[in-house]
Image 1 (cartoon, rainbow over the protein chains, first blue to last red):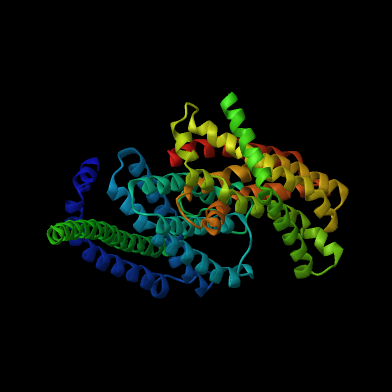
Image 2: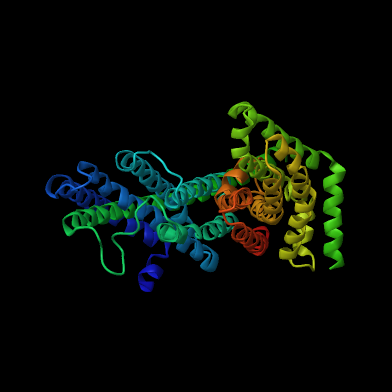
Length: 257
Length: 218
């Protein structure tokens, strides 16, 4: 794993790798998600209590997992920025934030749609929902800060520090259903005593989660690659402007003499 | 230590000397308190239900708006570079500046809170609870605000961004602050536990934000 990281640490090598991998990853991820959703909707039985509304689970649960995984990835990238000052770590963190915000938004919206028929309300201020909403605001704040700062190494450090401080929210989200008595149900897949979902519903859920995760990685690789290219373009522009200025200075000097 | 004390006194005299910065925060708080009865209606029973939230949200927003000017003038006149070069650790300088800001901006807000609380129909015991909670919890508001001000020091207009960045960290402070004041209102709700947690949040944020702020401004 460490070998893979140091191999891809070179931006040129990374761009070659991500160009080769993005499209297949995207196709496989899309197909896997489609299979998972088809399995969940047409093959798996309906929940004995919830009926068809259990279908929402196949989007809601993977989105919520990915919302937290994306932030964890950003925190790891933040460590990479602070410890190794690696420009790719910063590019990866920048590319991940909008994706994380999207998955958090999806989890909130699908949860709300699911809450109306099941709990009788679109929204409750319980610990799980509130902490995920806070995560959403955190993503938006990070994106706003990223967009308003310049792309220097020092602003990368600022964003990394804020990302790491905000990571405190992730364990709060994870354990909110255990620490507080919430309307949201406690963990039912990753449990010490095994999942409490029936296998007939669990398998399509896992398949669509794997599919959406693959899609996330495809988009994330593409976004990081775009970020690397944007930086190359910017540095080339600066170089071009500098050359134009020196040429202009030579011409001016020629005219005045 | 004398250097930090001098810095503390400089910050205080600047805050009160400029006059406007302390006064404006109080006026903003007053405006917020005035707006709510118009939104909710003048029914004093309804108002007293939500008054702890207003008494907490007012100082919170006022502090977040004021904190924008914590590092910006130092950045503009070059004092920030002197802080970086000074023999005092940057962490302690940030801590001192935040402490001075708390004294100059947060304390007056807390001092006028009982008056506003009475205007919103709050009972005497609940006013005491709110006051105690604000006193213990407001350092957390100031220190998280300081952190966000350090993050946005390079930006020209950072006011709204500071609010967006700070709100996620201030949600727990608000939750436990309002819980504490509710504890004073009824016999069944806990009183001591939320106050302890507020104290913990204040101490934790003081250390975290001083060190993180120094890393950011270095």
